[in-house]
Image: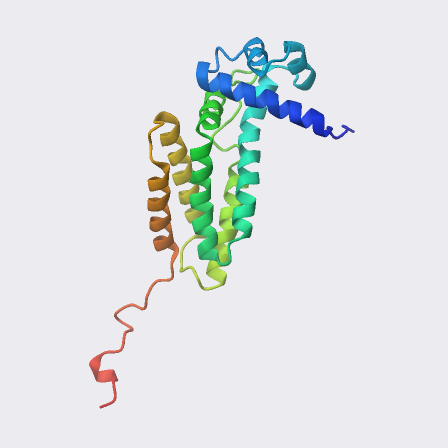
Length: 215
């Protein structure tokens, strides 16, 4: 059974991952050698080898850490929401805020995702990796909103995928264009999806007409 890592070990691993992010973002995957990452971190290559089995493991941890840090960022924001509508608004806006403040981390992650391969030559990260885990919290928000009567009739799984795909699309824009306005992107996304999930108003067919009123 693996022993839990000490606080110092965790801090060192995060330091190495942070250095890897900087090298990946600046120089790309091909030039992100352990030697360069070690120099950037101000440590020896042997220290990296002590904490990670090799470059592949370190690159995988870069991707994992982006999602771990995202969860740490989002959890307190979502805890403050007091309704499903507010929770959905916070989920969308919070995710894009995290992307805005972690553009270099995002660029580094994309470098890994499109380059890291398994021994058989296939990409280490497939399009479906982690999809269920990413969609699950959003699916819970949408279902809770429907149960509370805040949200209208729609397929919550399809809607969850639509929203996640939109967030991932925003991440792609941010990675390709450092000037992309993620604040405006978030505002528009919130407006579109809150409108899409809200309870529909009574149809005109059911609205009372003049003949239904007492004289």
